[in-house]
Length: 335
Ligand code: ADP
Ligand code: TRP
Image (cartoon, rainbow, N blue to C red; front, side, top):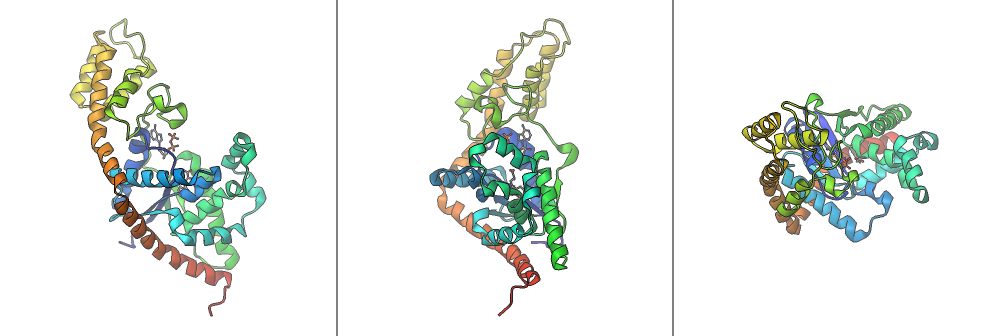
């Protein structure tokens, strides 16, 4: 691994299946970053414990996410891909950072306040200290760049705070400042099928196309996608729901095909049924290789175990080196 490259860390919570929005909006960036940076990507299974998943479900989702990321092109030869709970150093740094993380500042974090509102019966200490654990994930590898969505920016700010505070208290320059990162104008937004906004799990399964959806399911979901009554005048602007279908088509269909339907809309000859059929077929062709790869990988537990084991070993080298500095700085004696 080339140590002169900038260090990137990102964690993915093992929640459900990846959808087309996650793939085109996030995972494709990770795949590109592997070539440009020294990347650590991990499955944040400790973080998912705040909602108390059943052991069998947790195990299944970690394996599923691992298979999906590999199928999308995350390459363990180009990056370090591991499961958070395999990296024991994380728990140690988390505990040590907690000694300098204050109740008041943690209670002011927006994501915590939201959980207090939405799940008042389960406001556990893990939720309160979620940003401390996330800071440990990031600074243990001395990351500079963290590819995450806007909603994570406050957590990044806390990671900088905790790292700087540690440096100051112990008079050492161990942790550099990490910042949220995206590819700027290359950011894309994949639209949903039922809503006018982005494709998102929170708007229900009919709104998203999952990478593992079968051809039948994809055809059904697209057939049921919202449209308008059709153009009544030449060159009229389609309703947002129809524009969404055009957007999706641009992502998976040939430019000639898109042009044909754009033209048909402009001259009012379009039949949305035909457009949806075409979109469904192109979507199926686009996703079939990924779906098949996910299934093959998911069935190969020995391979997944090997990837996770090797990833943990690679991550351990970097984490152990940082923890040596941290332990010395704190003053644990070296006997
Ligand atoms: P969801 O909204 O379905 O819960 P997440 O919030 O878990 O998805 O998103 C995980 C990652 O996928 C984030 O980096 C986010 O920016 C990206 N992402 C999610 N939905 C879309 C979308 N429709 N278009 C582009 N990127 C998306
Ligand atoms: N909190 C992030 C999320 O909800 C997941 C995460 C955990 C993470 N640790 C991280 C992201 C470290 C980036 C870096 O999506």
